[in-house]
Length: 161
Image (cartoon, rainbow, N blue to C red):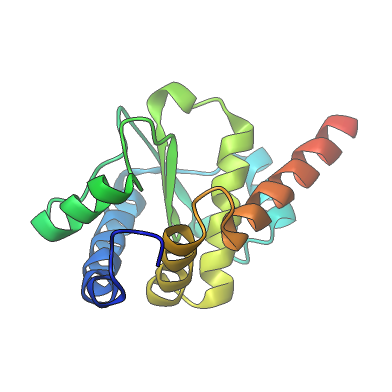
């Protein structure tokens, strides 16, 4: 691993990350808003199987885990920071409030929802996504590149329509 997180630490932290993600998803599902008709249609283009389940929650800052070990790992790896604009936790998506009208970013996050569905939930998604980010690097990680390309294709085709 290129990261300062060892494979053993990764295996210990992964269940904590999954638990935190599931709890945050429940928070978003309970308090977030449903997708607009336009975003529902775009979620279908992205490949989200159940777009009606998705909720968006606008927050001043994306939350960082409270668990000390998970918080330390998050800060060390810079996975989440005050600069983070969006975070997908399966069907719950945090959007930083100042990015509320950034449709491209929402479509990008919906791409991650489709990946969660395809991979089968928190553990398989987070295991693969976080591992790629730790070993290859965030912007070059294959799952991130897949969503970047998908977003560009969809937003480009929508502009031409």
